[in-house]
Image (cartoon, rainbow, N blue to C red; front, side, top):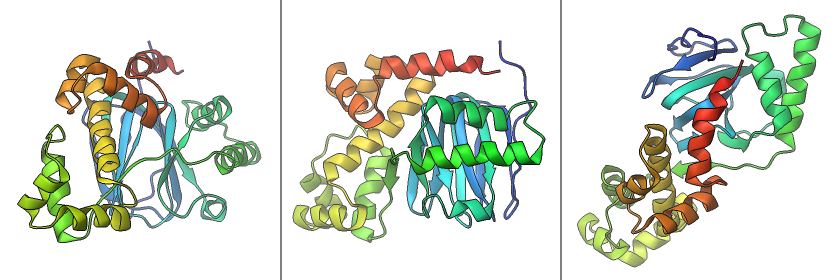
Length: 263
């Protein structure tokens, strides 16, 4: 069994949380806040979602979220989550992206983050800085793997996305949703590409994957998750999940259980 750790504090703006670790219960949410420093949050077990005004990023146990300084953001945790929070000094933030993102976690990156946020983190400032440099180098060489769901600003587009947020399994076509929102299918299709940077189909797929990650973390079966999130059969759900997340739903569920043995 993993060692028991106290939950990370719920920060109040503009508080900067120190690096550390904590077991977060399923559904635990941190209110919107911001930092003067950069922040990496890694779920060594479980799944976390980070939300800013630009949308929501989801990170299962094989990814890490990055939030640059000055971005108001909130966190929500799915499943019992071993949350690892690493503060990045301002002078190192310029080597990373200037917008929130999600990166894949290599074995070296994982061990560095776990060491820096463990119960007995390296206290020597020189060693800490060198290990932090390893983290920066790994992230600098890692392409984005964002499970990013952008949010709409246009009222017509937001009306459509709000309907789908309320019911991700809703089978309506874009034309049908447009009639409710008071916009043509052509207009909405253009807005999805120009404002959100993706097609309607892609946006809805990522929305459904976000919900699927949460359902699976809650212990729902792959078949029941597929049905709850709008797929007509488990096979098509598994294909979509694997394409977006980079692993099958079954592998993801195994990671949720197996990765909890982090020291």
